[in-house]
Each structure stands twice: as structure tokens, then as C-alpha cells.
Length: 249
Image 1 (cartoon, helix red, strand yellow):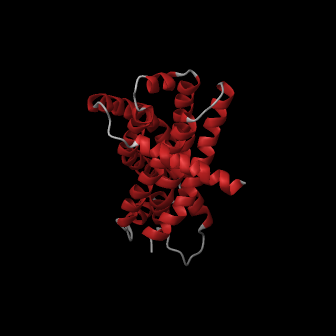
Image 2 (cartoon, helix red, strand yellow):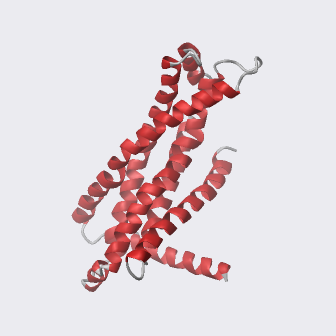
Image 3 (cartoon, rainbow, N blue to C red):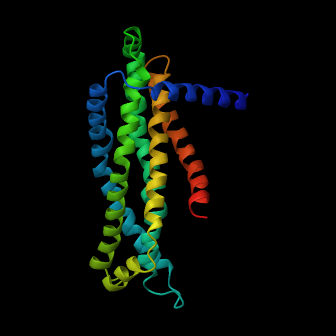
């Protein structure tokens, strides 16, 4: 029963994506809506990303220094470990799990409200491809802006760790900075950016799917928002394992 339900959901999701990625009827309208979604989904997420990243970077540096007390481990390992943890996982996987709660629930509730208030039905009656009109700008906007959010996350996280070195006596600034520079692998940056693009597509498409097929009233819209966050998070973690295996072999 569960398998058949999952296959039916996946099939309907694929058909939904086929409608979403149709050619827009009016490119000017598509462009203006995409710019609006960049502001709403991307720019408005910058403060949240920066605040969380600042504290997480500081916590990583403190935890690494407290737990690495062996004389066999170089002191600069704190900066190195902070940098690699941020680049490999936090700036993409953990960040997108956080954004799934903010952006995903926002999209699902917005589209779900339009469904229960029959605004989507009105678009369909007018001959507009409602899936393409509503969802494609969100997908493109978040894909376009996701590298910016990742860049902010990386910079702010490292700044948080640097702040620990500056304002506390846990580790010296010179050792932390040396660790940030030691054995740097440029591919880790591209690895994080590539993963974040996949995750951003999951967040927008899954949230849009659950919002688009809401049936009922306000209670069902809330349930759709919850389902969107839950299933987006599960798919992000599953894809994280697959991409890590493929990109870091």
C-alpha cells in the first residue's frame, strides 16, 4: 500500500514538473515574477542565513578546540576543521534543511491558499498554465540566488569562528588563520555549490507540489506546509548521501 501510494505520488509529481517546465506564454511576465521571487525567497532569507551561520561557525570553532586536546594534533586543526565542516556540509546540506522550513513552508502555504480560494482554478479557466505561471519563477529564482546564500553562509560562518579567536583565548588568531589556509581544496567550494543547486530545486518543487494539490481548507493548507518541509528534508538528506558518493570519490 505504501509503495503504491509512493509511486502514484512520484508519478503525479513528474507530470506536475512537466507542466511547470513548459515554455512561458509571456516572457516579460515570467521575468518580472522571477525578480519578485528572488526578492521574496532569496534576499529576505539573507538575515536568517547570516545570523545562524555566525553562531554555528563560532560553535564549531569552540567545540573543535575543546575536543581536540591531544598533543599529537596540530593546534591549527581548529581552523582547518571549521573551514572544511562549513564547506562540505553546513553551507549546503544543513543550510538547505533550514531553508526548507522557511522557504518551503512559505511556498506551500502561498500556493495552497491560492488553491483553496480557487485562484488557481480561475487561472486554469482563463487558459493559463497555472503550474508554469506560479511555480517556474520560484524554481528559477531560488536556483539563481542559492549560490549567493551559500556564499553568505560560508563567509559568515568563518567570520564567526574568527570572532572566537579574536574575542576569546581559546585559540590564537594566527593559528586559526593558518588553519583556514592549510591544505585548502578548491573543489570543496564547488562541491557545496553543486549540492546546494540540487537541494534548492527539491525545496521549491516539492513545496510547490504539495501546495498545488491541496484539497480542503485552512487546516489542509497547514498540513501541506508540514508535509512539504518533512519530505523536502528527507529528500535533501537522501540526495546528500548520493551526491557525496558521486562528487567526493
